[in-house]
Length: 180
Image (tube, rainbow, N blue to C red; front, side):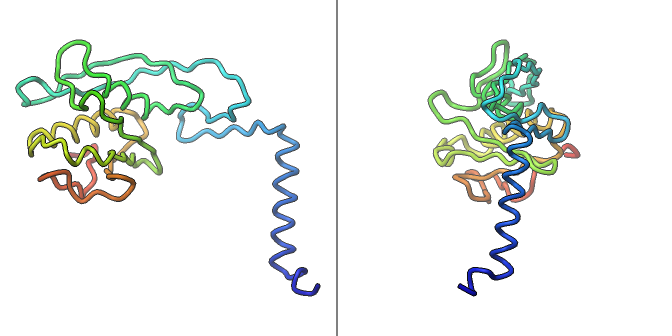
């Protein structure tokens, strides 16, 4: 019986009780706001749709630079502006420019922490065979789109959930930042 009443067990029980008290007092509706983004709300809470404008960077047909396209999107309750931007990028250009994310391939997932966007490219992206210039346009199209969102200062890439070293011949060791 003695080992059940250890300091750590009692401390854990107190933390659990405190957490339950907070949950009951807030009615399960804890709202969190991160870096000026729309609050993340528990799914049980109904909120009005949030509209944001995203800036998408599509490569020009000749591959020399990018075409900027702005779109207004409505975020779902669980969607971030970052993921909405990548979803729109995957949908392809509406005006001029070239699609960089091939139709039928999964959209990269993105999460942001401390001003860094982490883009998780699906494993299939390692077999696109775009070559150096195509891979560069793909990576910079994604990075420029995310860097256009105010809270992102740099973009790091992952492949299949692991830090990426390269995509084809393109090195991904260093992050892509606004200063570049």
